[in-house]
Image (cartoon, rainbow, N blue to C red; front, side, top):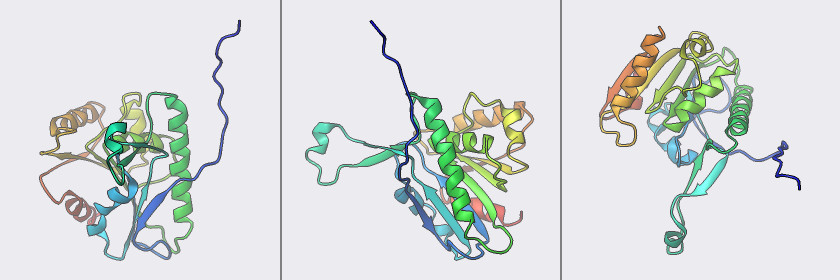
Length: 223
């Protein structure tokens, strides 16, 4: 009697993303912003509307796996049940990581194909689960970001910090911690900073109560 054998095949599928700002021409900055667990890209992108000054292109990719956020019993009474997305779970995690890394790499190349003149300054931002997502992506990417922002999240434990930092190609690193964040307390982000310090990796820690994105953008102006 034969056992159950797992198999995998590559398939094509449609990935969704949203933009704010000029998609063609010569944007001054390109922000790739990656949402957290249970979010959708269009809602996440709204957070960045305040940065839309006509010179920034903000790209918000959506994770490939969507799901209903509420139990079946609650959805039966809802006109529009809430939906979220996740970048990965523990199930077949290596394949899911490979899929989203390839997706983000392809999307960024496609977006940059429409730029003219000198390339824009590139900011990569990951929020919560999206922080680990962008860390894994940049670990295997040739993309040369100028700034990496890990907001309420950190570097996944399987990545050796000192080695991973060399894959940033000199990008500055900022950790963002919300003092009122109930999901990821500021202390957890501070602990991640201690991990970076122990590995000799330079970073900036930004703690906030309000307007963190404006402060981030203003901080990048001098670079």
